[in-house]
Length: 251
Image (cartoon, rainbow, N blue to C red):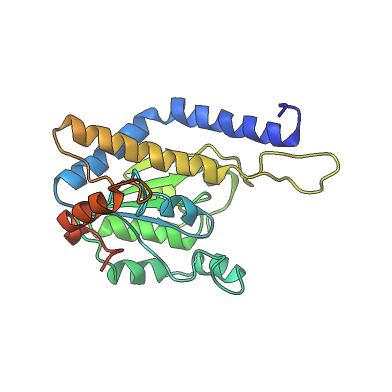
C-alpha cells in the first residue's frame, strides 16, 4: 500500500503521531506508570473513565489480556454515546453539570486510588468535573487528552478550565483540533481520525510502564492472560481471587 494513497497517508499520519508521543511524552508516561505502580503496591484500586469515543481507550485497559486485573471501568450510563438512542444523547450528557460528582459518590473509588480520565478535547463538563471531584476525594488523576484543544477551543465548563487543569499527570495525545488527519480535494469534510489509535497506545504504554515499575520493585504485577490460550482461565481465576477486593467488574 503506497504512502500516496489515502489509506497510506492515514497510516503514515498515525505512525507520526505515535512517534511523537513516544519521544515527547516518555517522562509523563513513566510518571503515570509509577503512580499506578505506587497504588497497586499500596493495595489501592485503579479506575479508567472516558465518554463518547474516548471511552474506547478506557475500555481497552479493563479486563484485558495482558492488562492489570485491578483496572476498573468507571462507567457513566449513556455517556458512551453509541450505546443509546439517539446517539447524540451521549454527547449531551458530557455537558451536564453535577453528573460526575453523582457517579463518583456512588462508585467504590476512594482516597489513594488512581483515576485515568480520557477526553480528547477535555473541554466538556463531565471529564473536567470527574477530574476535579476525584482529586477533591483524594484520588490521583491521570488525564489523557489533546492539549491543543485547551488553546484552540473554548471550555464548556463554568470555570473555563479544561481536563488538563485538574490532573496530577497529563498525557498529551498531540491530536489536532477536529481529530481528522486527512483532507482531499473531492471530499467536503476532513476525515480519518487517529485519536483512538494514539490514545489507546498511550494507555497501553502506561500499563507497560506500571508493570515494569512493579517488577523492578519485586512486586509481581497482577496481569491477566488471554482466555484463548491453554491455562488462561485458570490463571485469571487465581489472579481475580487474589485481588477480588480491588476488582469491581466481577461479582
